[in-house]
Length: 115
Image (cartoon, rainbow, N blue to C red):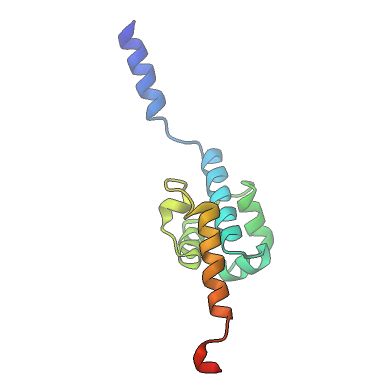
């Protein structure tokens, strides 16, 4: 009986995610990165080289993302594929967004040399 329990527990632990589960995770991660970077759906789609409706479908898990799109997204958002695949968390969450906002604000301010 304990052997059966161990085998069942082990099979649950090694279960591979379904295609639908992967689409959900990838969509959530892509939306999270887009929002973290402050990009609209249209702007992100342009940067990824796809239509905004295509990106919206990926984010809503209605469509899968090709490997090519994932590679482009990793370059655009400057994260590794593990983040986009949900194997690592989004960088920083709210704290990361505040840091990115502070960096962006610093670049918008005129430098002392411009004065």
